[in-house]
Length: 252
Image 1 (cartoon, rainbow, N blue to C red):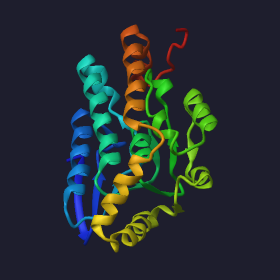
Image 2: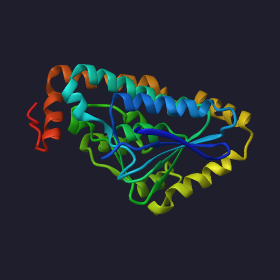
Image 3: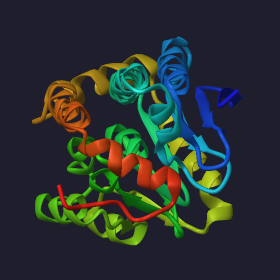
C-alpha cells in the first residue's frame, strides 16, 4: 500500500507515503492519501498529524507514466486526486506537520505548502518542474513557502530551492540532519499534543478562516491551464520526453 497510517504516541498520527521508486502517486494513491489524512483528523483524541515519506524523497508528484498510458482519464483523475489531497491537508481538522526529506516536487509542494508546519532534512529541495512536464499547478502552494518573485523564478526555470533557503524565509520551521527528521517532527507534534484537542481544532478552523488566499479556488484555476496545454497537444511532447528520457521539443 502506498499510503499507511501509524499511531505510536497519544494524540499524534503519522500518515506515511511509501511508493517506490520516487513516491510519485497515481490517481488511486492521491485519493488514498486524502482519505488517510482526513480520517486521522477525525479521531477525537488526535491533536496533530505528521505527514512524511519513506524512500529517496518526500514526493515527486504525479505518476506521469500513468497519464501517458491512459490519457484523458488519468489526467482528469490525477487532477481531482491532487485537488483532494491538497485540500485534505488544508482542511484536516487538526494541524498537519509535513516532514520533508530529499526531493519535494510538484504535488509534494502542494502537500507541504498546505501543511500547517514544515520541518525538513538538510538534503531537502522544493521545486515545481511543471513547465518541463507540460503542466501548471501548485504555484498556489509554493507561494506559501517562498516570496512572490522567487516563486515566479522557480516556476519559469523549474529549478528547486533548498530547505535552508525556505528556513531563511520562515516557511520551514527546522532543518535537521536526515536521520533526525522524524524525531524533529515528533518534537514539534509533541508540543501540540499537550494542548486541548477542542481548542486546537478551533485554532485550525480559525486560521483557515483568516487565510488571505482561497487555496482551493486558486489551485483549481491553475489546473485549468494544465488541461488546456494537454488539449493543445503541447503537454504530450513534454511528458513523452520525460518518460523517454530525452530532451523535449520546445519549439511550441
